[in-house]
Amino acid sequence: MTEPTPPEAEQPYVGPFIAIPVYAGVSELELSLMLSLARVCATKSGGSADAVKTVNRSRASIVTAGGLVTTPHVLYAALPEPAALFLPGGPGAAKAARDPLLKAFLQTHRDLPTAVSGSGLLLAGESGLLKNRVVGSPPELVDTVWGYDPADVRAGEVVQDGALWSTPSGLPALYGAFAVASRLWGAETATAAMSRLGVGGMGFEVGGGLPQPPPPPIPGGDRGS
Image 1: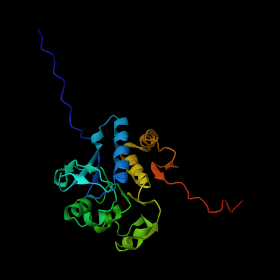
Image 2 (image 1 turned 90 degrees about the horizontal axis):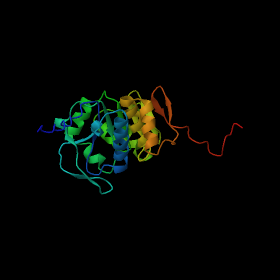
Image 3 (image 1 turned 180 degrees about the vertical axis):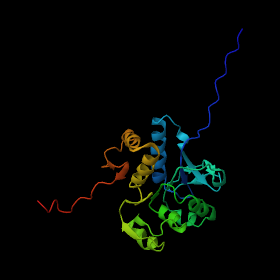
Image 4 (image 1 turned 90 degrees about the vertical axis):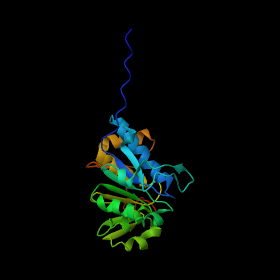
């Protein structure tokens, strides 16, 4: 009798991926926006949910700002070369920004496409990523961000400067997530993933493969009419 052929072992994912530094007190909203969008993009492209990896100095579990317990996927020292970075904010960002391993990691990968949301700007700023860049910032962090020697700081705006995207805290982080996902999987795939996640109607306009936020409403209506 012929022995049944054993199933082939699943091969580890070796394609491009987004690295997300995580830390105690990270915003689980901003983190989950990037995780969800990247996983949908990767699977729609025939890839793997492993196309996004959280990283920390330790694989010990951490507690997010909302009380969720999560375990980083990989150590800084063991991380393969990422294709892009996403830096979420959160109440723990100020302390995490002083971590020498995180600073070394960000400085080594400073030329990668990078999206930064909310107080994730503290991670980028302490690592020198904001120097001479135009930066979008939460209004409450504008004075702090100026201390990192940027070219300009725009309160409450989503800003692209080269391969760096910076956004206010919370849901606007989705603009940054969309930007880096578009770089890896293309704007069409990222847009389809947005629709699948139920956020396709947020006003995204895609030009040249990069996201543009919708124009802000004019107080009091259209004054030109």
